[in-house]
Image 1 (cartoon, chains in turn cyan, blue):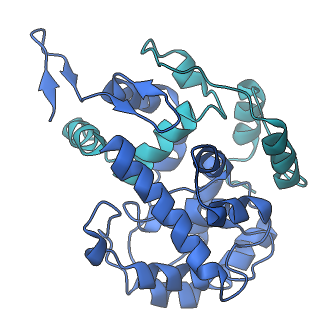
Image 2 (image 1 turned 30 degrees about the vertical axis):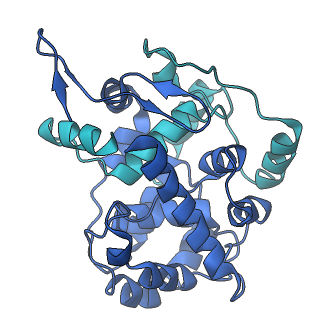
Length: 88
Length: 196
């Protein structure tokens, strides 16, 4: 399937590798994160995203000790990235 | 495998993730991502040479997909640039995880990640966001979302270790290089068993 998607996108002039497509799909359908673009998708799924369990949340809290996390805060994130175009 | 409906609409077969989620129109979803997600414009379209060098710009591109590396982290990665260049030189630019296993330069890939051992503040999420652009078909982005997904669907303990030790690279000892390999292999396994 990934190969099919990659080939079709290449025909559109878009070069996304199977690796990257996998990343995109997992991000969208992992149940860990609900990106804005997916919310607009009309394609149904057989399983709705679920919230992280307590262990996952605790693990994530550890990950996020000294970094800024944007969860369900796309506007804030977009504002952040606009202020940090070079990532610094 | 690409199908075309009577009205000319293109499509690819549906795919099911091990989590149970089924994507009925993966091509449409990819196109939606391209049209609406800022990371496509800021990260995927960013020009990064697939050569063997590792420049400051190459590293900073990762920040366009939320790597959030400050000057210290960027400098830390760049401190290994000479060794990274040597390691990249041994990996073909078009090497891919969808190649036959025997054709995948596993050892060279391990060597590349080994270059970045013991870098404070630079874990697999940041490192893979940098190196994916250098070898885009070979290096998946292994961030916390993918990590948690792999764990949720029965990923290996090695993948878990990436999550438990997020602030320092997983390859902090000789034993951890196989852990990275398992991480990549798990991602590849997903692609082969679920998506292809």
